[in-house]
Image (cartoon, rainbow, N blue to C red):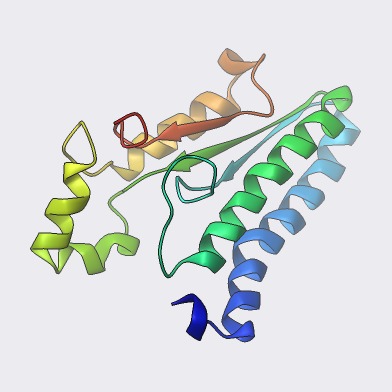
Length: 156
């Protein structure tokens, strides 16, 4: 909960979820500038803000993922002249260890799935296929975008 969140946990989450992306993107972009092309795909979340769902007890996580989207947009503008595209993906519920607590509580899982029109959890390979699409030349005119992959959760 927010009122119990320590500065240490806040900083740890920001360091992992935002600073880590910054450092990786910066290192990659330096090499991409030399070759005058490249693609950076960041992973955000539907919990990143301004998408209609607040996530109680996750202020630090939401802030870090919202920062990824803002950074993605800024880098897309700054790096486009170098032939570098930058996009983000915002997954909803995907079959990863992050949803294990929900799977242990059938009522919680049922409530979450009730919000997803496709009535299922996404598969990791569905996210990786989207990464492949954004990294490929098929999406050569897409930059500065955040693509939501959530089974229709935000549309519902």
